[in-house]
Amino acid sequence: MRKALKILLVIIALGLIAFFYWRFYFVFAEGTKAGVLNTIQKKGFLFKTYEGKLIMSGFGSNDNTANFQSNYFDFSVANERVGKLLMENSGKNMELHYSRYLGVLPWRGTESYIVDSVYQIEGVKTNTDLPIR
Image 1 (cartoon, rainbow, N blue to C red):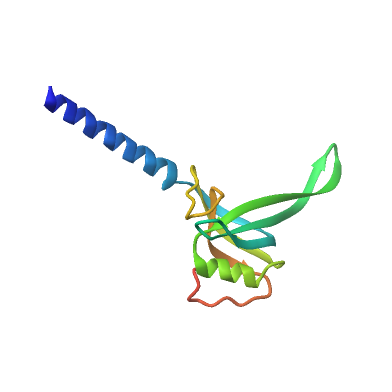
Image 2: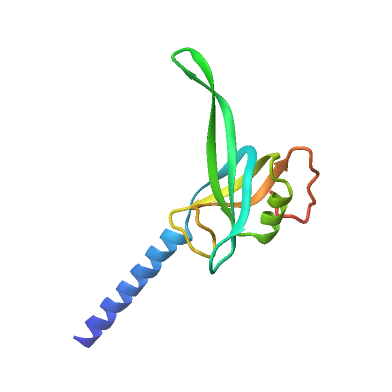
């Protein structure tokens, strides 16, 4: 009976570990977003993280009439150097690389989209030692 209980506890523990990994560390999606960096700020009570908003603009069509539409991309930045680079270039057109997680961890930010590198900032030459893909 004790052996069966130990095996059951090990299975439950492994299941919880697998669920925690899948929920908070498994990269569900990754990609790029381009637009104008509207805001970037460092905030938080216990864990200070960079939180930003990118405005992605484009033209949409609705009933054969062209109209201008804007979409917002809310994101967090876990890397200090990427956060500082974005703070220095707020208001500029840029292309960012992100990873999307299923869950949010407080030390990673308040959003499930985590920007981890910068592909390009319009009008700015980026240093090769920054996390640029």
